[in-house]
Length: 151
Length: 411
Figure 1: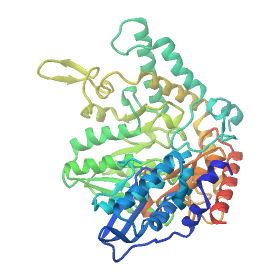
Figure 2: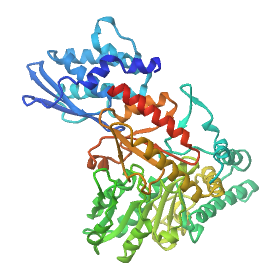
Figure 3: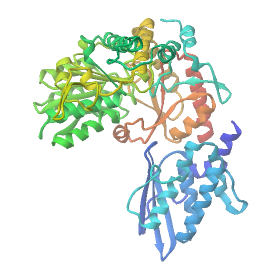
């Protein structure tokens, strides 16, 4: 397997793809947003319970490639307990990682997605769940789509 | 059977490495590669004959006009149309279908009428009908696809109840881009014609792969793209029966398609000029004519036999891969030169990314066929689609790659 491909499919990503965390609906959710990638058909819904400005609980469901599913799974583990502003900041860092491949040392598991930057067509896969989560936080009623959002 | 090595030599693009491996191009359902003679036709036109058509009296314009109209006659012969005036050059299948949906359907349909199509249509032969129906208050109905894996093809028995007098138009794909199913086009046209409905065939997947005879099929309209039959992108064809085309309101108006223009209004030329406003895509039409020559030289029966041969080998070798689900006709049944499959544990996009590393060009996704995917309980499949330059050895590359991918993701 090439270096680029093993960089893309890191162990962390494979693990989250095989055993997604926080997958399913959330009966207590007070925010839900749906995301889709019309060019490939990937779908991801994010369900969260906001307690004040803080994400008390978060789950996702949907279907898609290993990159999109692992990214959404990992995202839920990172966003729990965060405020909307913190979530936005984390997304900005994640976006920087997947578009440049540069990952600051302190940013934990999200760095596993650095390999995405050599596969530009897959950046949308990695960011799909995040778009849905940010929309849910904003209370945006429109489905998040990778075609109208910047990657 | 034709000489495969010689055929491959005709396609310059095939002789390259991708990711350090020989290119194995199995995305012909999306677009085919171009033989040297088609590329040469484009170069020749731009180097020797380039000029605007139909209005010039100088040498180059006459040469360009002769070549352009020659291409129209060539395409007419290719599909056995009675008259070159029945060939409208368009941008491709999508534009061809939209011309009928705008010009014919909206003018002739009224509230309560039915447009009949099938559950296996590409979005390009589905959305224009939905839009036309919405505009006039008509309804779109669907001929069901049979079987959990769509292996049963169209439900022809359902035609007895679906073909009511309210059906004014029947539109269907000749070969499904997602399933590989070959529909019985002549039978469908005959049934529709018996109740006076107009018929539209989407021949995008069949045109370069099998013999097409519009008179034998008995269709009213037929749409296809040049780029899936060894021709250039940006050129396609709408075939229509002459009387229908001459009644059809032009979708676009402007220069070249008018008889007389005053400050008060204008009158239209008959087909084909009526439907080709503005300067047409001259170079690509001429190169499409070259593609017709190329395919006929090899022989479309031989190409169809080669497609069938490769599809059966692929069915046999893919069906034993653990966890694979193949949709469309079962092994041994007639099938166009493509195979679509899915794995429960591995998404199509991961497969395509991995296979690319082995030099394979595959397609993964919903294939512009979302309603069918939903019906089959799938969000995407991976598709390998073959053409006249593909070999049995390339299927072995595909199979080896899929085994490797399966092992990586599932263990």
